Length: 415
Image (cartoon, rainbow, N blue to C red; front, top):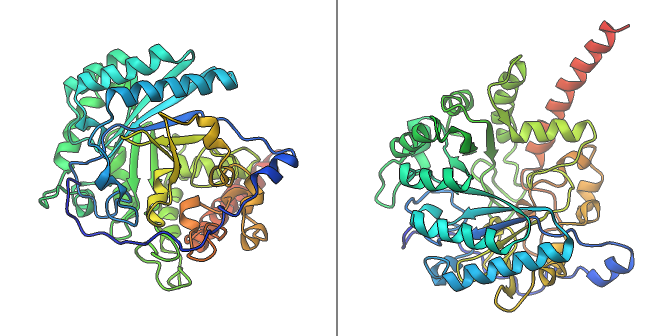
């Protein structure tokens, strides 16, 4: 997104909504303590060379990108590095993760990324694992050479085969991008760069056949596939979920994902991990989530924009204008100050952040209310079930029943 695309606008609420009404001091008096940040997402470039139709940054409620500088300046990079180092020392963290994001981070030149990563690693007294999340259009040997030398992992967005991908992931001029992404992926997935490949991110599109999409992704040999539900809220439901109920009378996203799950689960040697399915299974057997999409584990990530503004998850841009904002800045504020905000506490208190509907649900500990951004409804804020509530219930129940069936069969074999 370079400029001038139509957007869906939702203004800032007139009155404070939950979690802005959350009493953090009372939580602390009750023994709650914040979880330090371990994942720092740096928006190193605020523009993009694609105009994806579903993009939460450019096509949805929050339009703050329009007033931000194009790239993160060196003085902001130095301030970010110093704040991360301060946070690491204060919480005695042995390692942190740095994610380079945008916009499109590869609109920064290779030498700029080299300098940025070097600044953070030279400043922070801990292991700094670095990943870049890119649309893949500009991925070439110049970037990959820098990433190889710096040991920077690479995640790429791909929505399936050419027809599926080019439905939504097009240039501002309307041209498809699949051919360029595929060329970048071919470079990434061959020696000497293959070790850098962290996986593929695919946004679910109900118009695309699920199994064709899944198999097109597998052609690139990803270690992990992330299927992401398109971002939406009760005020602006995602495609296929309409009306105030948000469910449109069915569970189209669960049905789409179940088709892939059944194929994936049936393979004795699975060709790739699927993060959503792995997370659901792990949660069902008593594990803790490591994903924003589901589960009750406290969030440990924070975003820094190109101008140094500190934000919550940028996906909150889909809710309303200003939703991810904290009012804090790396030149003035520490990350510990961010941890003290009600909006951050709400994403760290687990069960206490669930709506009454979610708390009464049999899959609540697995679902965790779904992605926090998808819970927004004007008036009640984020204290609601996910707009994908029915889909999540069906998907999790299906996975649970499948596993239960296999465990029951194993128990019979061992009698």
